[in-house]
Length: 68
Image (cartoon, rainbow, N blue to C red):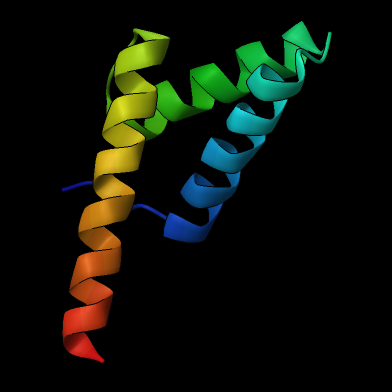
C-alpha cells in the first residue's frame, strides 16, 4: 500500500500544469516533477504518471467529501 501525501501530490500536479502551460524553459524542474510523479504513482511514463496522479487526487477528494 502506498503512503501518499496528497497535498504534495496536488502541488506537483499544479506545478507541472503551470510549467507546461506557460512554456517555461525550466525543463530540469519539469523533469524533476515528472520523475517524482512517477515515484508517487509507480509509472515511469510521465504522461501515465500524471494521469494516475490526477486519478488518485479525484478519488481522494471524493472520499474526503464522503467523510465530511
